[in-house]
Structures are given as C-alpha cells and as structure tokens.
Length: 284
Ligand SMILES: Cc1cc2nc3c(=O)[nH]c(=O)nc-3n(C[C@H](O)[C@H](O)[C@H](O)COP(=O)(O)O)c2cc1C
Image (tube, rainbow, N blue to C red; front, side, top):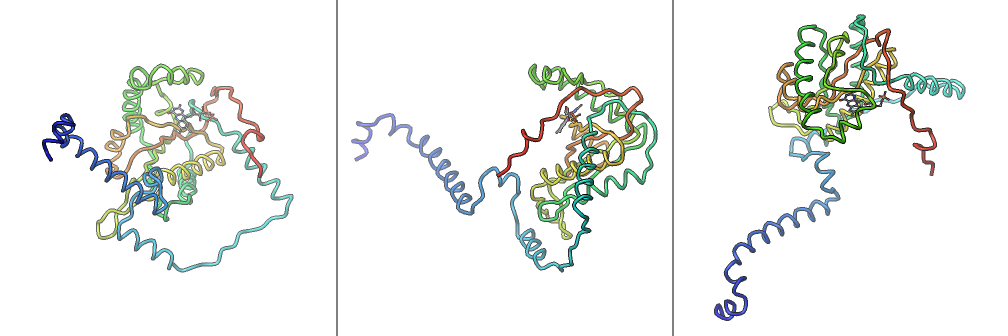
C-alpha cells in the first residue's frame, strides 16, 4: 500500500508531515471562527468587546438585578426646545482646534466640572474605563512637551510617511508644540484597557476604546460650553513614556491629550468649512 503511494505521489509521500500540520492549524482556526459566528459575534466585534470570564458574567447578571429608580427629564415647550438646540449647535460650531493659547488661568472648579461632565458618558457594561489626568505644574508640562516633541520629530521625519505629512501641511502643524507649556492645563485621557475586581482578578472593560471616545466627545463639548478651547491631539508613540511620567498603571493607555485654556489674543485657525446638513443627514 505504502509502495503504491510512494510510486504515484513521491512528493506528497515525502512531505506529508509538513502539509498535515498547517492543515490541522487551519481547520482548528476555521472551527473557532465558525463557533464564534454561531454565537452571533464576528471577529471585529470580539476585539471591540473583549472576552468575558465568570466574574464578568456575574457582574452583568448582578447589573440586571440592580435597583431601579424613576427616570424623568425636565420638559420644555417647542420654542424653548428649538432655541436650546440651536444655541447648543452655535456653541459647538465655535469649537475649533486651537493651537495658540493664552496663559490666563482658568478656575480649577471649572476643569473639575468639565471632567465631571465627561464622566457622565455611557460605557460598555458601565465599566467607566477612563482616567483624566490634569496637569497644571509647569515643570511637568515642560517634561511632557519634551517627550512629545522628541517623539513627534521622529513621527514627522520617519514614521508617518510622505503622504501623511503632506496631508497635514494645510494645518501648519509640526513637532514644535509650545502650547503644551502655554496652556494653563493639560488633560491627558487614559483608557483603561481592563480593570480589576475587588479580589484582584482582571475585569473586562467592554468597548473601552469606544466608551472613552464618547467621553472625550462630551469633554470637548463641555470645554466649548465653558468658552475655552483645546486641540484634540494624539501623542503617537509617546503614550508609554507619558504614562510612566505621570505614574499611571500598565492597564492604562494614553489616547488623547487636550491642552485647555483661552485662545491667545493673536490666535488663528485654518479656514476650514464643515459639511452641510444635507451631506451628513440621511432621512429614511
Ligand atoms: C482623533 C483625532 C486626532 C487628532 N490628532 C491631532 C494631533 O495629533 N495634532 C493636532 O494638531 N491636531 C489633531 N487633531 C485635530 C484635527 O486636525 C482637527 O480636528 C481637524 O483639522 C478639524 O479642525 P477643527 O477641529 O478646528 O474643526 C486630531 C483630531 C482628531 C479627531
């Protein structure tokens, strides 16, 4: 039998162990994908959500048993409603990414209120996977600036590539960022990629990226509502150094850095136009 196999398919008979192993690996991978699909979760969602363990399942079931409280919202008449929504839009329409700050102080309580607003964001399974680090000390701002400028110089000259650097030319941004020392406050937003249960085991932070992004949206709205400005900056490749500098734990990842303050008297912003309503609204 073996001879017939060797005579008719010599290559296959010599190399079958090398073909067999990848085949087994592929089959197992395929079965695991099919299994997840049957549970109704695709691969992308698995990455977004995170995997549950028994503690997480218990937490979810406890949440469904949580006390319920009445929920009512203040109502206003139609004219008020139109006025309020228009006025909110007008406030938000004044939001621009501003990179030129006055060093004028902002009351601490204002920053606290802004962060309280950000902390009202919804989060996957109410895990609230965010930490807002507020930096006011000048020496710390200088250290942050040094780290970011060092990494940004490498980003602009080596990591980002020609196309990305060209796309940014219209905003006249580069790796020199004086606003990191000029703005009275820097808010560094950290996402907690996971948390801890009281017994020290890991707690899954479902949709932590999305939850933190939503809270940053509210943070930006609160900053605008206070008549302050900021620029949404993403400290590419500087996250770990910033985390170490600020003494944050390894389950946290710095996602956004927001300098916050008043625009300087000579501040300018790029002359950008926003998409009109008909381009972003689709009625069904
Ligand atoms: C996720 C995200 C990352 C951004 N990263 C940076 C950044 O690293 N540096 C910067 O100067 N601006 C950054 N921006 C600001 C954008 O350039 C700015 O929002 C865009 O040009 C539109 O201008 P506007 O904010 O004034 O409407 C970022 C914005 C977003 C939403």
